[in-house]
View 1 (spheres, one colour):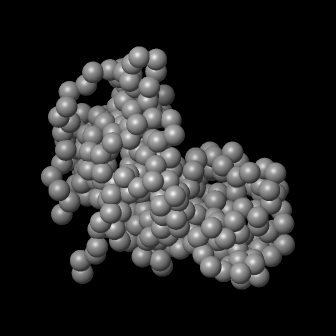
View 2 (cartoon, rainbow, N blue to C red):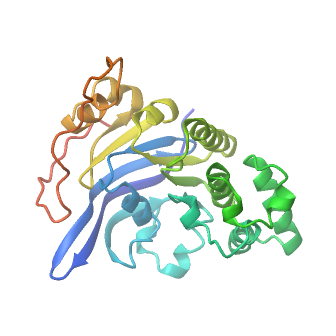
Length: 294
């Protein structure tokens, strides 16, 4: 069964000004996402993953210049003014930001933050919004959701705050979820629970997901396709099994070798040599890319 391409990104670039010079955080990035697909976006810190997600939603336009095409349901949303982009952002495309403790407003209850999303993107009345908020908290596994609506973020554990972030992101039933390292700083058990929750909800809602992570193990277990970012560019992309079994780019191979496998005790672990180039570095214009998805 063929599925519709809901997001098609072509030549996305994001540049920030620093005095008279330009810092290129994202360089000519292209990829696509289908209905129900989970795409992994992989790379070490500073490779441009988070800026890419923010650029898709126009959040980087306040601070820099974003160019290229981001076609959402066939429409280039990069060309839309803020007032027309706002209903799409949060309503049709939602995002889970890193570090839920800093993403959630500490001065507002969880209920207020959940219902304000529903108020902005649905026609539900006040009572219906509260009922929907309780339903979403219950859906993501928050115990006693009715009473927890009036709790503040600091009254939740790290895993529960992440579940709240997922509930807020999915409240308006978006078609695409941008998950920016949703399991950062969580222990392995909670990490597995959060990933299973996102995948089950994506399957239930036939929702596309872009999962940003630096963990190739997570990608192998959760994603259908993967795009590897280095220095603001996608250097390799394709089906997960194909890329991980036979990486074609040296950086992808380096990431693979950095994952400990059957390493004897007291053996020095492999790390990718050197450091990533700075944002103002002049890089070649032709990164290696794997053939189109199968």
